[in-house]
Image (cartoon, rainbow, N blue to C red; front, side, top):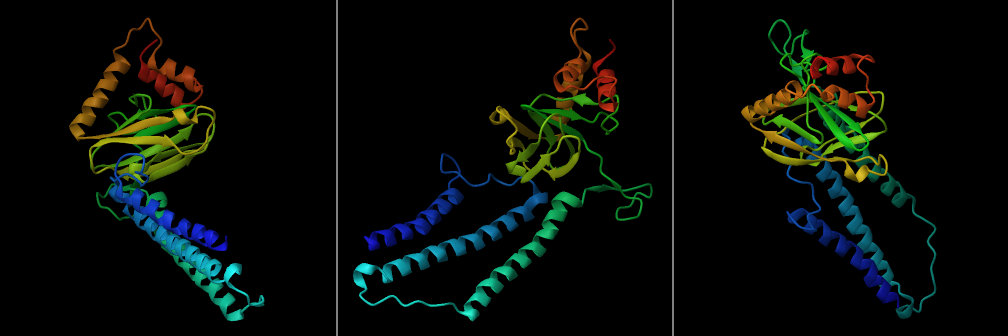
Length: 304
């Protein structure tokens, strides 16, 4: 019976390795468990860090499984008639199995600082009045779009012709559908209307928790046209599963046509019906007189 358990323990690293290979090599179907293709060139280091950590974990996982198999197989009671011999420890062994993981973790901590800085801290900049980058008057690139997460959908708003949010020419987007131009750096503002959400676009390696009452800034550059999944990666209530959206990456001309169509729907409406701003305010809880967001939406929605 002991040999049976030995083989059972051996199957764990074997099956784990097979599942890893299947997920990495399969591109479609139920076995496609890997990340989708990375289309955000600003997040290549995220994949490198992920692969490095996964490789280290995989080595420890397989090595531990093999050692466990070897011990249970070699010292099975059915084939050993020698009395049990107790070992009370080895200071050298304990030193090395403490020092090696410590060095690995410290190395990962140092390496991930640059990755974290690139994707969370070093915000894209614009040249100041002198027209030159990397000078004292550089300014952070303003957000081109806003994401408002609410139970249970994504709402989007785009900067108008002035390229600034929270102004009278803001453009209200379609629910659960974000459009961006291909090959251009995009900066987004994330807000939550009710509870904690997490804005996750796997193809961009972009994930950011959205905390009610605060604003998060994200940035990326989508280098390949297409449609990509947007999901909520934080359990936010009974309808969490419904928070599925899509990111549409298109050419600059297609993006401008999309904004024009949104602007036309926003301004050329039936004035006997509630305005876009009123619908937005009613559903999100914002009011026209409660602050800049409500005021600007009321102006953008048309005269009442």
